[in-house]
Length: 136
Image (tube, rainbow, N blue to C red; front, side, top):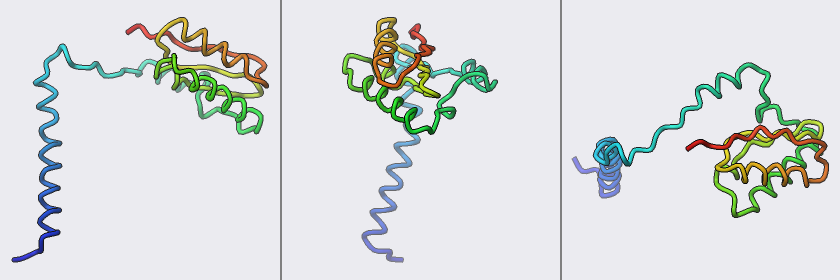
């Protein structure tokens, strides 16, 4: 039965994608243990955050001034090219002008720099620095 050239290409492409997906786990194990990147395990943190006492991004205030403070703090952090990717991705939660910073950073210097940037933003009443220095 003839399906046409387009159908044949689609089937061939699908077979190649499937073959590549099946080969991935084998390639990862062939690299050896030395090259393996450990998986992130935030189980403990996730349990801690479920208790309702820990401030999470879902608690970000929708008040216009709090949203603006969060935006400006994020902008100041991202603008600093000397900070790590982890530092650029810290959680910033603002409620009634109080900025909570959470998440991992690479060094104590990054932690201090991020907190200082947050304190310099207009409208910030207080900074609750809960940043954690990675132990990698």
